[in-house]
Length: 336
Image (cartoon, rainbow, N blue to C red; front, side, top):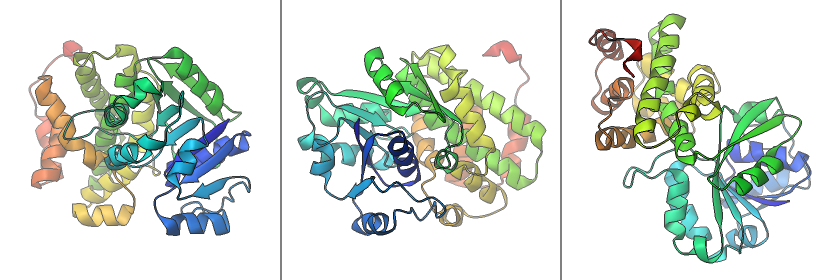
């Protein structure tokens, strides 16, 4: 299969490496000439210095070339660049292509998921050229995928044939792929779990223990599920790989940018200094305002997400935020 990866960040490169080793013809695009120059000359990504990428993997800054020569296009840019990237590729798409979003976020101005942003930006092209759009999501750290460690992921698309094609293409000895037609639920989980991971990191930074982390993850999932069901998503999705699975790995792993940023915030770093220390996009920060807008739109209580939003937006003491959450009105767990 001929596959184009749009974005040369850690996740895009990890997937490109996996697909290339699996025998696919993979080309990686970046809008940054210096990034492509390094990859072409060394076949090593700066974030993965111990991994030499396959010689047959190609790199380009030519967006028309990567769009016109590949059947599957994997959009692996940060969520804030999904719309502009979709606009850039729209003139060069071919009939019957599959676009796979691996970004996790919600657009603040429209409250659209990443695949909805792509479809909205492409407009009539989706119908005219029979373009299929899907999401690939789950408990997947690039740092492990690049090392070909066992991983599972979801191919989410309402069109089951398209979901099955993606499942077949991305499956390998080290990647097990499941399908799920509930793309809205899968993408909601992917965006909001990053906020819970921020909270988990803050708890670590404060020096709290595993008891409260376990409670945070459990109640965080309850919040995400509560909102998702009101949005028409399938409940089972929240207990699967995109929900519980991705939440666990993001909220507990040292590989998680969101968890790391939260830990620094809990230790007293300013937001700007924490983001500089992480050195990569922290999607949980970008998801806070859209999450609160969704909570208002669907009249849904999100106490943990709301506490993180309040702390990030207005400052204050994270330990006081924890105390406030612990002192909320007593209720049954079955309230949800």
